[in-house]
Image (tube, rainbow, N blue to C red):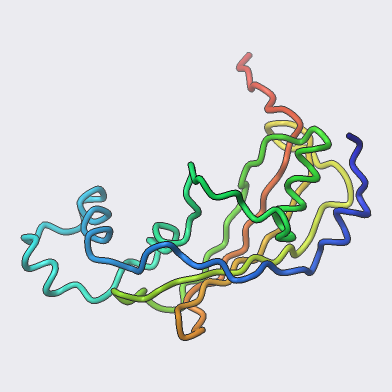
Length: 170
């Protein structure tokens, strides 16, 4: 299927519905994270009693959609539609090439998080990348707690390429 760039451009500026995280910010996940990065060596009982906040970088632990979900992803969301249009035109591989993160405050244990995604922009045409030719999408993520307070904003630059070109050394 050929890509109609006007269909893609029509999605620019549109924002998704609010997507709720499946679990609240919680101590077991913070504990696992801390153990993996060797950040903390307190006993579990002490850790549970003293921990009130999660490291901001853990935000995606609770908000990332499941990799293998029995639920069908929302195909009507603007950013998902843009990706599907590109995939349908043969740009099947998606890669995040830049991510700017702004954490406004630490996450509190027990908070219920959610996010929205706005499609900010689409490249005018194909762009050359180190892994092949494709289209660039700029996505703006806004992460909120259950009270509607913004806890983080992130700008994600993603490319959809037709095929990943192997890099060879000479």
